Length: 100
Image 1: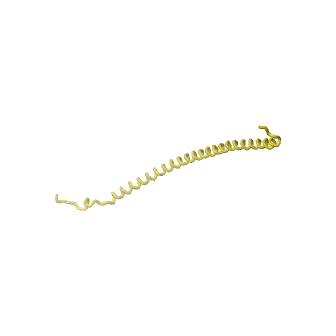
Image 2 (image 1 turned 45 degrees about the vertical axis):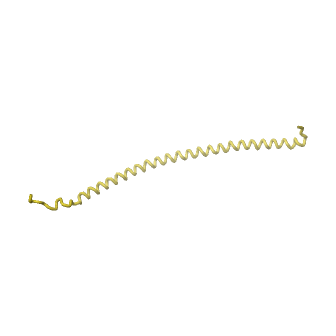
């Protein structure tokens, strides 16, 4: 396979161009992998912060729920006591039997 001088003048610059293109493609793969890794790390950090914030929120909400439950129980107890005081028994204290 003998190449003539005119063919070499065309073939050599094309080889350099092909080499540059191959190098760019290889670097593009590494760059896209690096970008994907950075995005993944950023998402992971965001998820960690979300978990921390939600656990803090859940702690305060569970404390609030506990307070509400205690207050509700206290109100129910007071209401029952008030009802017991106000409720009249159907026959206790209404009629005194001295015949007996």
